[in-house]
Amino acid sequence: MTKTNLITGFLGSGKTTTLRHLLAQKPEGEKWAILVNEFGEIGIDGALLADSGAVLKEIPGGCMCCVNGLPMQVGLNMLLQQAKPDRLLIEPTGLGHPKQILSLLTSEVYHNWITLNATLCLLDPRQLSDQRVIDNENFRDQLACADVIVANKADVAQPQDQQALETWYRLNGGGRQLVIASQGAVDPALLDLPRLNQAQLPDGKHHHAHAEKRGLAALSLPGTQRWRRAVNQGDGYTSCGWIFDGDTQFDTAGILDWARMAPVDRVKGILRIKEGTLLINRQGNDLHIETKPVAPLDSRIELITRDVAQWNELQSLLLKVRLSCKD
Ligand SMILES: Nc1nc2c(ncn2[C@@H]2O[C@H](COP(=O)(O)OP(=O)(O)OP(=O)(O)O)[C@@H](O)[C@H]2O)c(=O)[nH]1
Ligand SMILES: [Mg+2]
Image 1 (cartoon, rainbow, N blue to C red):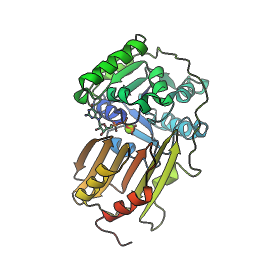
Image 2 (image 1 turned 90 degrees about the vertical axis):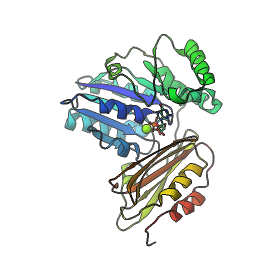
Image 3 (image 1 turned 45 degrees about the vertical axis):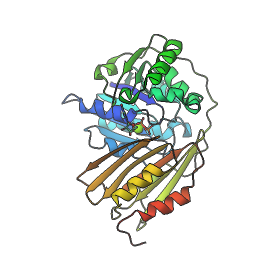
Image 4 (image 1 turned 135 degrees about the vertical axis):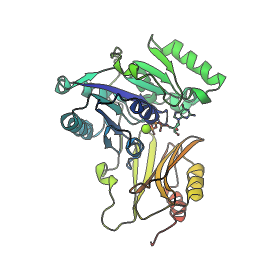
């Protein structure tokens, strides 16, 4: 039996950061697996988790509950049967609805494979003051389905955010454990808590309009193509991602300016620069960057927005901050 947890939370709340923290504490000799599903077509969270010592399976392009959950089921079955992990942590998209995933994981098929433990839901308390976020059905349902609420980003929470969190918890906490954290630094013992909350959520009302062609195909660049872009849409959000071949390098200052200025809610990227790898992770105005000496095999960058974005204009600017390119 694989001990399994869902790590949910709205866009940019700190799910991947929490996974990285938990993986860093994996006991030696245990085999852990990660299933990560992103809204965008160009998988980036997988790259952020790649050297974490866990078996990794990515399902980019939409949310697991869509397309009848099939890509999710295939990915999950492969992980369980081939890797036979002691523990499995699942990060669904921040724009997804957890109910369908929970019903899949609790279905008969997985009874002999999975012990479903507590669902941890990451919450950036600042999001409680963003009307468009609190009106979002997925945001509310993720919190309703959680067994443990992790109020992350305590380091940047202002007194009004703490107040908003207290009010929210008083009205919605329902006796569930509330953990305050920074950088997703939670106690791994939380993973062994049982799943208690069986919130009955309404079905349906969850219709995505994804592009026809999506999924794993977006991960590769066919033939001699230098780059390609992929767009995804659903639940009022749009993502646009680009993947560049291994010969393309970016000007560090140029790409950072581009990522900072893009008028979108979310930017995630893993890019080849002269010095190696540049990791970019922006939520709203918070920009987090990291560099690593070893260059990635290709470059990927993804933008997500709930407003209309001028993808072609952003793309022209992005193409200009490449260092070496022949096209
Ligand atoms: N200041 C601060 N930043 C944080 C904290 N935790 C995460 N971040 C930053 O918040 C951004 C989003 O973090 P992620 O872990 O990628 O969030 P996520 O929930 O996985 O995002 P999606 O998968 O896109 O929904 C990154 O820039 C992180 O560095 C925290 O406790 N404090
Ligand atoms: Mg993530």
